Amino acid sequence: MMSPRATGILHVQKRRVPLWDNARWIAIALVVLGHAILKLIAESDVAYEFYLFVYAFHVPLFVAVSGYFARSGPLGTRQLHRLVTDIVLPYVIFETIWTVVHWLLGGEFRLDYSSPSWTLWFLIALLAWRLALPFLVLLRHPLLISVIISVGAGYFASIDSTFALSRTLGLLPFFVFGWQLRQWKVTDRWLGLHAAAVWRWRIGAVTLFTALLGVIVANIDALREAQVRQFLLYDESYPAFGYDQLWAGGIRLGLLLLAFALIVAFLVLVPRRRLWFTPYGAATMYIYLLHSFVLFPLRERGVLGGPQPGWVLPAMIGFSVLISIALSQRIVRRVFRPLIEPRARWLFRKKARTDTGTIVLPHLDAPAGTLAAEPPVEPPAEPPADAPPADPAAGTPR
Image 1 (spheres, rainbow, N blue to C red):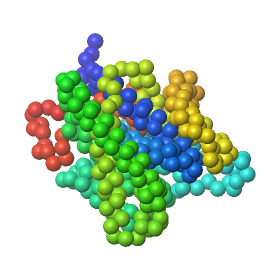
Image 2: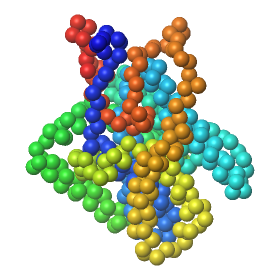
Image 3: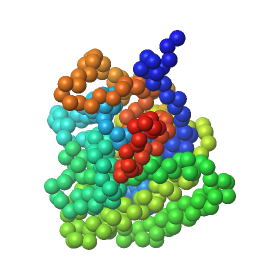
Image 4: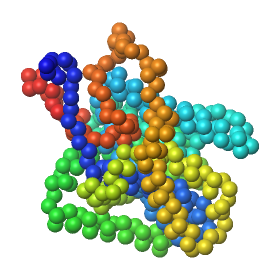
């Protein structure tokens, strides 16, 4: 029998890390929750307080987790194929579906791929981040540069929601931060801590979240008047909601720094062992793309508009959890896989061409069900961008 090396096929033993599967599923459940209670915040201070608390970190967290598993090396044939099948095609498919839905409900049939519908902005942003990361990491301080880009982008009114550009640039630091966490080997360091140190970190994390909630509750009227929610959405320039002062960027900078701390605090609190919802961490893109269809009737029918009884908020929280569980099931993934993970073999050449100078890496078959936005395994840490080149005689670093 020929060895894998002799045949040119590389078999890599991969492992799932429960910490990250748990973090993925909790993060996407918070995304569903934020969308579910949106209609309640206009009439309820309690709902608005909870909304601001969640939005202070949940989207940055989701972006950071995607960045943690992003590859910063040259994009080869397999990586480029997956960008098309896991991001571009689902975006085209679901944007078309939403256009048809709006048309069937009496709206104008206007197929405009430059204006993503509701949650689809994330796919455009994810594509841009993954394409930009190999270039960003060539710079000496990619995280600092991404923060400067984010803060600076808010001053330009021309940077808006077209092709999700405002969110792409505004949330870029969190994607780079996620990648940076892997360079710092946070998983190995965290899993290697003894129990006493773990609990000290968790007490600090609970203290931070408690303090944040207390500040929000104590200042809810001021936060509503200051339109802090608009800053947390990252989808408009500062002048678009009345902040044309030079110091407006300082608010975004403060929220970026707060979100970095909250991301770390959240990850500290995430269970490190396998739990009942751990397998659901592999289905986050299914939840993300499908939950909006479940919430759409509530959002558009006005069911949650106006003053609501006190039980509605906890009911919507529970409903959000149920949605996240239901859309994680294998039957859902089996039914909707052609839309969310289309193979589209007909779209690609059978043999990659290199006569145009395209870098083609050795082909490694990806595990079934793996999404570009959420690789299911813990990758090895990459060397820093400014590290000296490895000695060829020493072999390829892993």
